[in-house]
Length: 252
Image (cartoon, rainbow, N blue to C red):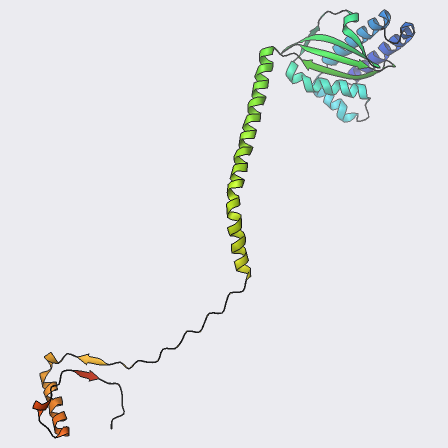
């Protein structure tokens, strides 16, 4: 794995050296044919070396070498992230250096098309004005149907999220009508409860029992005789209609 890393670095270095030696003949906006050819050849070698590497081994290289140069780190990371989507590398499609290389400001961008196991992809390698490698990127090619399907899925997910948020907001708004009652009830709990008024004591009521005299004629006769004797009169002068029991113990 270390040999692959060193090989990749050496390919970039050799390519940069070759380009640097021929770059003097190019103008500010034009790309010299020799420069373009050397950039193209260097990029092809970098891509073929990189895509033949095992992504797991590249991950190990990144872990063991935290101070690895930025270009190698970009190349390794890009291939690791794209491998599952693209699959194994097959070959690069033919392209002329003039069409593959564009100047973007102070950078040179080399774009190559590659055939992979699962789907094709565009591979871009960016060089700075000093012709030093900056980054490597893989961009998978999707058909129009796949793009529409992905866009439809993203739209559906967005609609679901919006709908859920609206339902949640409606639920929260519906709970606002209980807030005044809650505040009012909470305020009542904090106020002192009034002292209950004393319950007036009811005076004891003398219990009287009225007996039905129809079933006790003997008692009526005895009482009538006693009253007649005390009043010195006859029992014919009055009629005993009822007898009430009194709890009073004070007899006179």
